[in-house]
Structures are given as structure tokens and as C-alpha cells.
Length: 160
Image 1 (cartoon, rainbow, N blue to C red):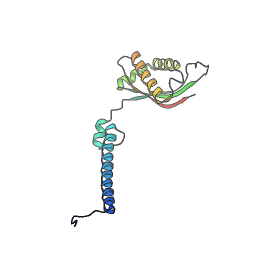
Image 2: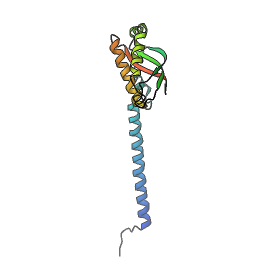
Image 3: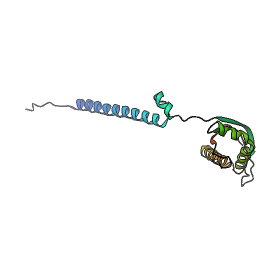
Image 4: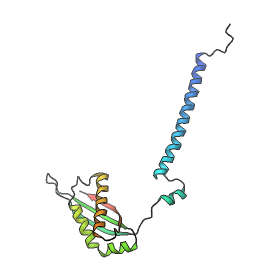
């Protein structure tokens, strides 16, 4: 009496499995495509080399300031620590680099003064080091005319 097509449990299960597989595959493809584009946009992976040339900032001339060991501020509990670093300074152009080289004594005086005022806790971790770098660049640009310092790189760093 029932002339219609009858679906039993086996066929319904297969149909549901196919639908679920198709949805999962579509979601995975969408995630991979969108995720890759986000990574390229943020610069975490290399995209088209032509795009990379436009997004990479030019590196200014650099000057190796050498290695110095500086005592850190005394901890509240009396601990004594020091920072030993090799610093490379990036200037905005060759003229600015010449100014930095000319006034190297003032540059080191400012760096040493700023580092001595920090505790080990102040420079602990990536955030502390980033904050120190930014403070040093800002302070050097205060004492040197024309804000010649673009960045400061810690090439070698030991904190004990």
C-alpha cells in the first residue's frame, strides 16, 4: 500500500555521515584559507615576494656599541644583579649615525644611568625588555639632536 520510497536506518546513517563529512571539509578549507591570509597579512608567513618588498621597512645604518656590564638597582631584599649586553644602535641615516659615533660617551652614560635604575624584576621577560628598549631609544633621542636613534637591538644579553 505504501508506494513511496522507504528509507531504513542504514541509509539515513550513511546520508547523515556524508552531510557531516561535507560540512567538516568545507569548514576545514575555509579555516585554512582564511587563517593563511591572516598570517600573510600580519607578516608571520611569507606571502607573495612582491608584497613583502613593500611591507618590509628599510633598515637604517647600524653601529655596534660593544659589550658592557652594568649593575642593576638593588632589590628590596638586598639582592645584587647585573646586566651584560652587546648593543647595536640603528640610526635613521648616515648623518645621524655619525652623530651617535661622535657622542658615544654621552650615549653610554645615558644607557648606563637608565639600566642602573632598573631592577631585575623591571626587565624580566619580553615585556620588560621591550619597555627598556623603548625607554632607552626615547632617552637617547632626548639628548641627541634630531632624534637620530631609530631602534636599539640587544645582540647578546645576560641578566644575573
